[in-house]
Length: 147
Image 1 (spheres, rainbow, N blue to C red):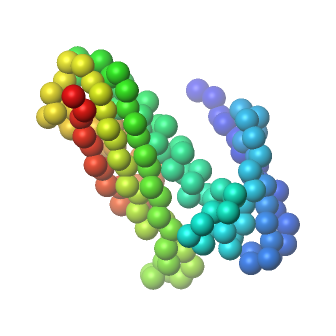
Image 2: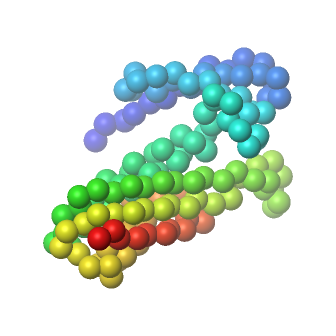
């Protein structure tokens, strides 16, 4: 299996500095990062580690769920997956930590009932490689089946 890379060039202090994160393997883009915007409610045109984790988690989860639906005898027509990653203070060790991840999926699936979809959705939450990497963060799931 391949290894993927990203690179960040940072200049300055935490509060006054900024950086650019480059998605090196895919070469699809370079994105601005800054701590003040990371900690603000509005991103102001910058990304953050949390947003990048959310992107990784939502895409990984969608792939895993698609595979599990097929294994259960269903056919995924569409899966709309959102991952919301929260950053907050780390009361135990100081600084900050990821305080939670909420996965939300709405699926249109042929050949599975709501119970079958829910089982596949829960199994995908536990089995996707990004979920496994993030075991130190509480991950919740809201799954619903359309049609």
